[in-house]
Image (cartoon, rainbow over all chains, first blue to last red):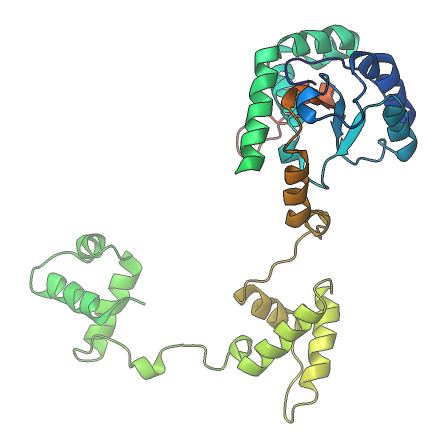
Amino acid sequence: MSHAELLEWMITRPPPGQTSVDFVLFMTNFVLPRMSAVEEGGEWAHQPERCVLVLDSTRVHDEVALETVRDAGVVVLPLPPHSPDVNPIEDVFSVGSSWLRRYSHPEQFNAWPMLTMNSMLAHITGETCRGFIKAAVRRYSM
Amino acid sequence: MISVETREHLVRMVREDDRSDAAAARDLLISLRSATRFLRYFMDNGGDFHYDPGQWNRHFDNSADDPQLRDAVLSTVRRGPQLFLDEMVDAVNDIVAQVDGAVEVSPATVARVLGRNGYTRKVVERAFITRKEANRVAWVAAQWGIPLRCRVYVDEAHRVGQVAERTWAWSLRGARSEC
């Protein structure tokens, strides 16, 4: 998620669940092509859009995966441990779960997971993303 | 404990105002059983309204209120918060055995001491050990200068699709919820 929109998403299904390989594939195929390399020594005000990746320290974000991201010239900014409140993307999952609970059935999700997720994410607009980020900034500026 | 004034009031209402026991009890917000017992005590004891406070059951002999036992239990629980109750009883009895004339305490007594002092058994959490406020403040300060347009957030969610599966439902008390 950037400051203005949801960039990409990917579904991984168990078994074996999500691994660091899935994370690398997701980053290289979907996210990194839409990010920019940071300009060495430049001030933040003059840096290009989408050049910093903010992520938590879950196990799938291992050093190999993060090195792949850094090789693309993107700055990696890990969140402090156990701090989902300063991560605005958590709100996407929260709002998305509420949408799924209200507007979809388990059978529908199991039969058409991509379509259902697409519908759910279409519900989260750029304006909504800006709201999530404003709320997170407000939380950690308090 | 219902006060002496309430008992006097009850007796006056029944004997002088000719109210029924039930009506007087209802007006004084006490049970009919209590009112009947107070009136019988008044009749049997020749106008005495209340038991001798010295005879009230104040649980002076309750071992759970013993300050030395409380100190022993609390020091044990502070030293070993992960102990099970039987292990804690053994530890407390080891301390108690050093006091002359002391008797062994039971698990129920130790449980009561813990309960009265606000101790309950909880799942051990380690999240707040690794979550340090100083780290969070430092992180916020470090990333404050990065414009919002530069940031991309990425995260994973598990079992997103399962939120549509409803595992709770309304049903009448005592009946299973099957649907």
